Amino acid sequence: MRSDIDAARNNTLVFARAAAVTRPTDSDFMRRALELAREAQQRGEVPVGAVIVKDGAVIAEGFNRPISSNDPTAHAEIVAMRAAAATLASYRLLDATLYVTLEPCAMCAGAMVHARIKRLVYGASDPRAGAAGSIFNVANHSALNHRIECDGGLLYEECAALLKTFFTAKR
Ligand SMILES: [Zn+2]
Picture 1 (cartoon, protein in one colour):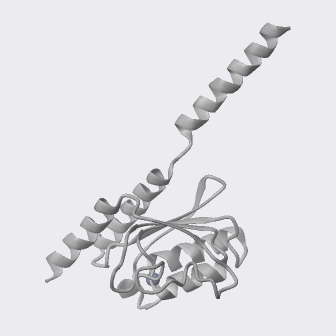
Picture 2 (cartoon, protein in one colour; picture 1 turned 60 degrees about the vertical axis):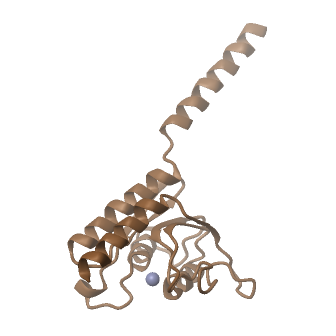
């Protein structure tokens, strides 16, 4: 009897370890956002990429494309949120996490609040326009009816280097 219980316990441990190995991490999702940022760069757009994850899986992706789309709102986060909303057939992205290589601007952070995004993970902070605390705090403001959990600085160096290289090349 006791050995059955021990065996069951061992199985549980084995499964738990397997899950820990295979489950994608925040860094995995941010690396995908970085790949998308490079796609934007190849099109001559400011290199920013975004990924939306729900229940541990990517449900939508986007990269910055306002110039090629003739659309001032086509930031990576907006592109990804539009795709996610279409996929879920819902204007609210409940329990979703948005990963983006650069701290969102006021427009994107505002749209995330409207979408009820649960959590925001961003790479580089934006000291000129960031709306997750750097300049404004739209993403998590006590006066708003929805507050997003914000985690900044993930893969900061890679995210910032991509932007720095882009702007250095432009000047
Ligand atoms: Zn934006």
